[in-house]
Length: 283
Image (tube, rainbow, N blue to C red):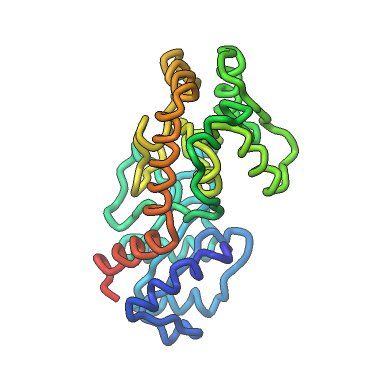
């Protein structure tokens, strides 16, 4: 279970006149975290949901991508199967990794995690005068390998690349990214990662094109630099041009800083969730 999921939007819900209760029998709406797939819920709570006309809102942050054969809402535990079989059509559901190329019922909505780390806005000189043009640190995957190889073969960008190495402590992960003008956001296949939520204030964003459905998508050359997988010669040309143009580099970085602060804050995401629930459930 994600220990920060429900506390994230608790204040917003309370400020809008709602309350949280300790007993499932006392609630009007049940919030269910589908991320729990290795442990059981209290069976008495599951029975209550199944046997009562209770409104259900689910949240799914399961890390699935194109390297997985699972499609939302799978995989599910036996308890989750029983609940979703009965409530899938009449609940409100939020999923972090929805495929924008696939059709979905109108009660299933994209959901993205909020900002997890931030620092003060950099100045243009602080960003431009860094040692590396690009820092790319990630776990190994075929898609990330292709991007790393393209950067190495092109050779025009001064890059710090570490793919598949031992995971760094978070402080060291951030410290190394502060040596670069740009960082790379690339999923393990098809969907994006969570680097934006912790690195948006540290450097500018190179975003691999992906199929993830976002409530607030990013815009190429406005708040990010989008690349194919592998990046094309034209896309690499654009990155080279931008890292050598202090004003444009800073414009993209600052736009993304503002964008993330506005649309990926805990407050915005909490209100987004509440508005979707109110539209379909009315609480």
